[in-house]
Image 1 (cartoon, one colour):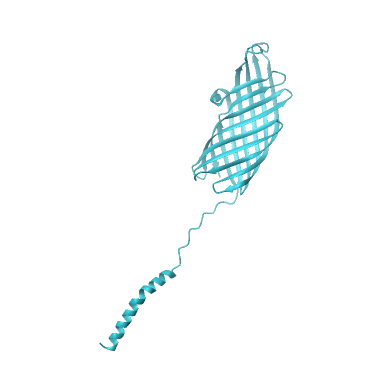
Image 2 (tube, rainbow, N blue to C red):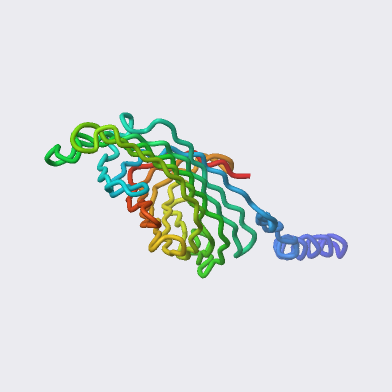
Length: 265
């Protein structure tokens, strides 16, 4: 074997031994693929508006001027017999841990109640027009990806127009009508929690007073988020207020199931 052939063979062996190492080293030197960039959430204000239906039953005492108080009791199962008109909507604006919340309710309810013995009157007809609105501000005590808990403070405005008519008995034909407006300061907690990206729960509890001796509002709901724009909720709400002034009495509890559609933007 000539010297030239031996040199050629040696060169082939060396190249074959070093080629896998070179390929492996080249692979190690290839830069890694960039990691996916996380989606950035909006840092500005977000808004939620929720028109809803509240099948509110009503129970308690209503009085106007110097006429005897009338006791009314109609549960939410009788809402279609007692509700003449209703409109409800809630709203929330959020920025970071801060929020502004609002709630507006208008109800016109009619109730015809028989008196116990029919002496003072055979029955009492009560018509109550109720407007109430709450406006407050909140701060998130707990703020996590799957929910938040806010402390909330604000004021609730009440404007009532009650009419009572007595039929039969000593007060047959007696009728009274009176209107009152007042404001109560209220504070409490409000929050939500997502069990999954779609299913969540909400709840709140507020209490206060001012014009009224006591004013409270509690509720809870279960919701489903269809997408970033729409979600639906069902729940239960109860409100109570005890206001008395110069013969005007409104000491009632409103409670019943709710169903609403939330719009987020």
